[in-house]
Amino acid sequence: MKSILLFWLFWWGLSVNIPQAFPQEVLSQGALTLEECIDVALKRRPELDVATLDVLNSEYQVKEATSYYYPRLNFSTGYTRFMGPENFTANVDITQVTAPLNEFLPSAGIPITLPLTLEQEFQAGKTNWFNVTFDLNQPVYTFGRIEEGIKQARIGRSIAFNQKEKKKEEIIFEVKRGYYQLLFSKKLLDLTREAEAGADVVVRMVKIDYETSIPEKEEKGTTRLDYLKARNFLAEVKVRLSEAGKNVKLAELGLKMAIGMDPSLPLKVTEVPLESLPHDRNSGEMKEWTLERNLDIKNLRLGVELFDSKRKSASKEYLPKIGIQGQYIGPEDRFGTPNFWYAGIGITMPIFDGFSTRAKVGQAEVQFNKAKAQKSLLESALVVQIDRLNTDLTEFRERVGIFKMAVMEAQERAQLAADGYAVGSTEYDELLLAQRSELEVKSGYLQSLYHYYRTKAELEFVSGAPR
Image 1 (tube, one colour):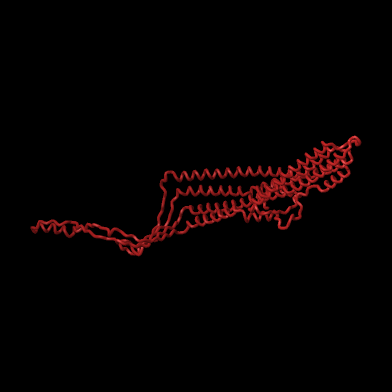
Image 2: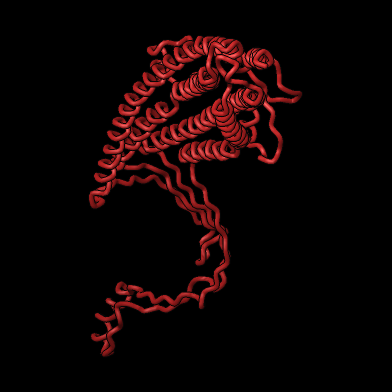
C-alpha cells in the first residue's frame, strides 16, 4: 500500500516544481499586457480630464496677463430723459455802459441810478438725449508690473502641467501595483490549489494505509493520529485556498478601478517574465535623477520662482503708473456740442496707502522663504526615501535568490520524506513537516517577487524614471 502512496507523492512532487512566477505565454486571447493596462488607464481615468482643464485654465491666465499690454476700449450707448432743460442765471457786467450814464444823469437832473450788472435767465440742455460713448485707457509704462504678471501666469501654467504629469505618474504607479498584485495573487492561488490537491491525495492514501495497517506485524504502522494530522493540514490548506481566491477577486477589482474599467466587466491580463529582477541604476544615479525629474521638486522650484516674482511685483506698488486716457461722446452731448472728445496722458503716484504695500511685500517675502525651505526639506526627504527604496530593493533581490534555492531544497526534502515514508524509514510527522515547509517556502518566494516589483515601481514613481 505504501508503494501506491509513494507513486502518488512522486507524481504530486513532479507537478509542483519551482514556481515560474510569470511565464511568457499569454493566458488567453484578448488579455491585456501591463503597457496596455497603462494606456487604457491614461485614456479612461477622469482625473486626467480634470488636470487637462487646469492646464487649459492656466493657458487662459497667461493670455489674460498678456492682454494688459493692450489698450482698453469700451463702448457704451443709451438714451436718457431728463426732467427738462437746465435753468441758468447769468450776471452780465454792463459797467462800461451804465457808469458814464450814472455820472451824467444826476447832472441832467434825472435822479436815476442804473445797475452795473444785468441778471439774465435762460434754459439749456436737451430733455431727450441719445449718446454713443467710447472710453480709452492705454498703459504706457507700469515699471514692470505687467511683465511680472505674465511671468507669474507662465509659472502657474508650468505648475499645472507638472500636476497633470504627476497625476499620470500616480495612475501608472497604481496600475503597476494592481497589475503585479493580480498576477501574484493568481499564482499564489494556483500554488495553493496544487497544494490542496496534493494534500487531499495524501489524506486518502494515509486513510487507506491506516485502515489496512497491521501494527503488530509491522515495525511501524500508520495510526489514526497520522490520519488526523493529514486531515488538519488539508483543512489548513483549504482555508488558505479560500483566502487566496478572495485575494484574487480583490486584486482584480483593484486593477479594474486603477485602469478606469467597469467592475462588472471581465478582465484578463497577460503574465510576464519577472524573475530576471532588472535594476541597473545605483543609488547615486537615482538620487541625481530624482532631484532633476521629480515633479514635486519641479513644482516647488517653480513655487520659489513664483513667490520671488510676487515679491518683486508687490514692491513695484511703490512706483507710479503712466497711461493714456481718452473719451469720445457723439453725435453731440446734451448741450449740443457735436462730437465731444478728449485725450491726455497721466501719471498715478501712490503717496500713502495705510502701509498696505508694505504688508504685501512682507507677505510675499515670507511666502518666498517658506517655499525655499519646503524645497530644501523635500529634497532631503526624497534622498532618504531613495536610499530606503534602494535598500529594500537590494534586500528583496537577495531574498528572492535565497527563496529560489530554498524552494529546490524544500522540494527535495519533501521527495525524500515521501520516499522514506513509503519504505517505513520516516514517520509521517516528517512528511507533514516537509509538505508544510514546501508550501511556505514557495509562498515566500512569490511574495518576495511581488515586493521586489512593487518596490521597483515605487522607486520609478518617486524618481521620475521613464516607464
